[in-house]
Length: 193
Ligand SMILES: [Zn+2]
Image 1 (cartoon, rainbow, N blue to C red):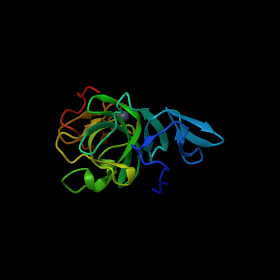
Image 2 (cartoon, rainbow, N blue to C red):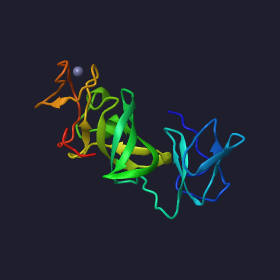
Image 3 (cartoon, protein in one colour):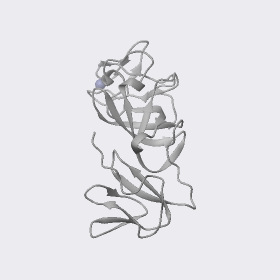
């Protein structure tokens, strides 16, 4: 994945009218305005840049921004899936809603203690999972599901979209009968989100 570095480092304090980037490269979100193709901050706050989704927003200092940090546990939905990594749209930190758009990357080497051959056996696009933030290197949240309590919370049949039922060693679709594999969390199908 090639990602262009933003003009403002995520988390940096910005002033109203401060330049954040251009619309060819970033998507303006809350706390910003656009003039002549340039994205500026509307308020005094912290610039939040989500590189994978390209969203840039500014959050006020008065309402402390809820952003992912290393060692926090997050809930997210699997987006674009490759054979060795998946993009995760982060929805919550623990049980709290986020202050902006954040994405994380779950790489195959951070999925489980044991060897995993393909991300296809771990999670699929649309699944909801619980992961831990292990680094923010290059302003990208890197996720891990190696711990026992982490993994897929809700997995959906890749054929018909029905919620898969967790059997002893496999995941089965109650509607079409398709059998799939996931790295599930112990509270699969029961977690409140
Ligand atoms: Zn199905």
